[in-house]
Length: 252
Image (cartoon, rainbow, N blue to C red; front, side):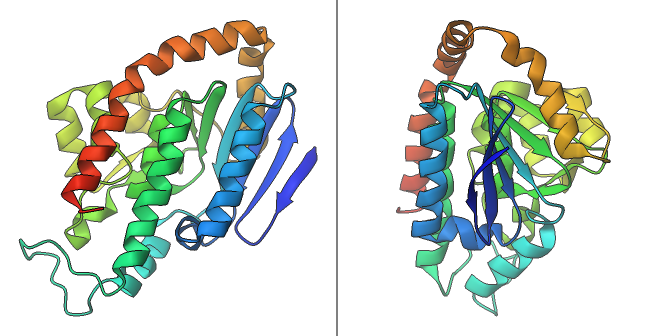
């Protein structure tokens, strides 16, 4: 393993022809920090142009992207008297922090949507709404039995950010996508049955299990992988228009 980045938020390394990012803690602090999120983007860009790398894998430590950290983040920027059942748009005390969260996360999703190498996401535990979009933009999604997508935005009167409506509608159709977005959670088994998770892997040594699962796909030559990705990325052309539409609705 060739470790490239080791900071308070994540580790990034090159291992087995893969660029691997392991999110460790305080994911919302990472995505709302311009220098730190830019450093992550730089690693991801460099990996795309590294001839040794055939895939990018994104993993998370348990609870790094869970409901508790999301609740703490939202409550820290939301007005204390905000009523989630109010029909009005939620009011934020720290609008700039909220905007940075959406802009930086969507920037990452935009980039991954056109990535020229395989993108793999491993869901080891609960992933909340905004980061669910990062999972959905991936080419392959792997989950442990404890893996779960939590649609936590509904508790605060927020919209499903991270391009979740775009991806779910493409994968599942309008009605099923809407049903999921207005539900509380979709856990690993249900996600597997619907086809938005490719495989459920044992929780024990989940990191290594994900690495092993992807290896057969990396036996193909680079030109096959690159051309396959370019053709499959064609469907994401309208993602740019979708994210621009979301930004206009939020006055970003």
